[in-house]
Image (cartoon, rainbow, N blue to C red; front, side):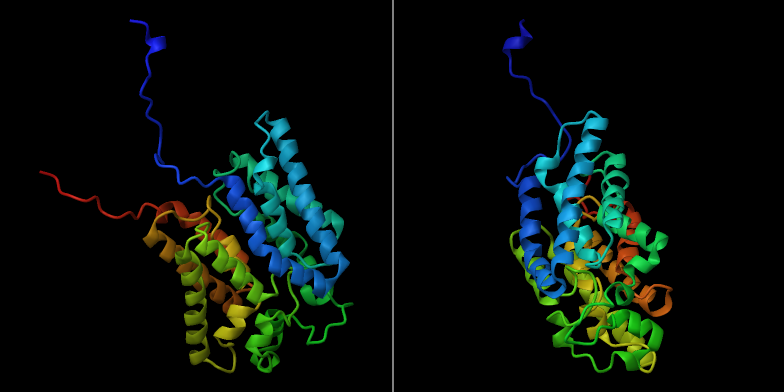
Amino acid sequence: MNLSNRKLFVVSHAPFWHDGSTITERSYHTMYAALPAIIFGFFQFGMPAVSVIALSIASAILWELGMNCLLKRPVTIGDGNAAVIGMLFGMLSPATLPWWAVITGTLIAIVIGKQIFGGIGANPFNPACVSIAILMASWRNLFDFDGMLVNYDFAFSAAEPLAALKNQGVAAVDHLNWFSLLLGDQTGGLGATFGLGLIAGGVYLILRGFIRWEISITFLAAVAITASLFQQADPTRFAGPAIHLFCGYTLIGAFFLATEDSSSPVNTVPMLIYGAGCGVLTVLIRNIGAYSDGVILAILMMNIVNPLLDKIRPKAIGKVM
C-alpha cells in the first residue's frame, strides 16, 4: 500500500484546541494597554523618557535579531515579544537612565532572561524582572529615583514614597493622598507612576482575555491584607495599604509583570496561590527587607516555585472501576 497517498493521523502534545489568538496579537495589545501609562510618563518626564523607551524597544529588537542569527533560529522579531520586553524594561526605569544602562538592560533581558532558555515560551523567569534585578544589584544608584530625578521640577513632593517610607518612617508619607498617587503625583519608573492608566490597561487585557484576573486580583488583595496586618501591629512603623498599592511597581507588577505567560501558572488554583505569594512577599520585602520596593524580587521568587504550583491540578472527572 502506498502510504504517501494516505492521510496520516498525527498526535502532538497539548494544547489540542487553538483559540485563534497569536503571540503577535497578545504582544501588540499589551503595548496598547501600556500606552496611557507611557504617554503620561512622556508628559511628566519629557524627552528623556521618550529616549529611554525608544532605545529600550529598539535595542531589545536588535538583541533578539542578533540571537536569532547567531543561534540559526527563525527570525522572531515580528511577533512583538521582544518589543514588549523592551517596553516593560523602559517603563520600570527612571527617565534619566544612561544609554549604556538601557542597552545593557535589554541585553540581559533578551539574551539571559529569554533566549538562552530557548526563546519565547521557555523562559522560567520574567525577562524584564531579571534585567531590573541584575541592574539594581550591580548599579543600585541607577534605581535611586530621588537621585536620578533630582533635577526635575515637580509640582509635588519629589521624594519617592517607598524610599521615604524605608528611610524616614511613616511620618514621611502620612501626608500623601492616595488619589493623587493614583493620578501619578510621585516619582518612580517612567511608566510605573500613573496608577490609573496601569489599572485601565490591566482591565483591558483581562476583558480581552490576554491575562487572567486571578493573578492580578490576588496580588493586589494580598498586598492590601498584608500591609493592613503590619499597620495594625505597629502603626508608627508600617504604612497602610494605600501606600503599598499605589506606589512603586505594585500596579505594573500586578497587571504586566506577574501575568507573563511563560513564568506564571496556567491553572486556576496555582494562579491564586502565585498571585497571593507575590503580594505577600512584596510587602515583607518592603517592610522588613533591605529594598524599599520588593515587587521585582517577589515576582522572581514566585517564578521559581511556579513549576511546583502548576502540579496542583483539578481531579479528573469520573472514577476508576
